[in-house]
Length: 310
Image 1 (spheres, rainbow, N blue to C red):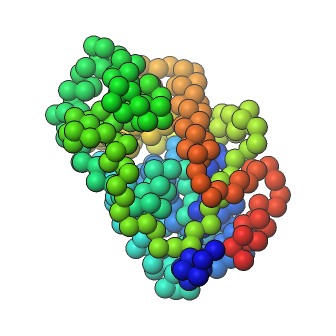
Image 2 (image 1 turned 45 degrees about the vertical axis):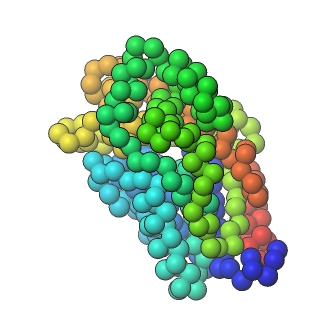
């Protein structure tokens, strides 16, 4: 570590796929370190989306408050740039109080933007996005993924053909800017001015994570998830095109309320979608630099973090 790095204030990143045990470990760390939690989760930002997003309970939040939870209405847009601005403000407040920012979550794009800075990617243009989506209805997303690979092979390699939202965005960026998402992403803004210790927690066996995801989804359903989504479904200003309603689980429950899926199929598709999310999260993490891995089933994870933070 250089002198410049060691003079920076400390921060801790605790990343991991959904259902990996991030919240429990984070709360334990607040009991053993002078730190405060900042949520790094694109679903937890929404008010009224508690059960399906696995938001920390009232008891957990009383024990260890989380910043950047319940900050916007589900009808409101919130970008990675918004997150970076908010997170930096909270990190500065925590550091000024003599504590360590502990950033916890599974939205890897938020972590990446916070760590590396923002690239000059153009804002979305609805008419171009709608044109791409219309093409997809005719050709299929696999054909558009092939088109993306012809001019942005790096993005195409990173994105699954069925990841319609991100494939659409990558094509949209190219059509707006005349440059690929990969090219634009290489032009970064200011890096994070912190000495960051980065950790990822996950079960070492994929089957264990799959079992945890299925168990948790069923617990959500039993805890009143359908009633939670029904309250959102009955609002006139919400629909499935909004980022909030595209969150895993919410889309499937919405389609169940729409009569498109029966209860059993809703649970099956919700579990599958959550497992696909976890797979994408793990893909991000496997290519992440300077990362210390923790096993969800181990007993000494807090000790490993404490030793690294020093």
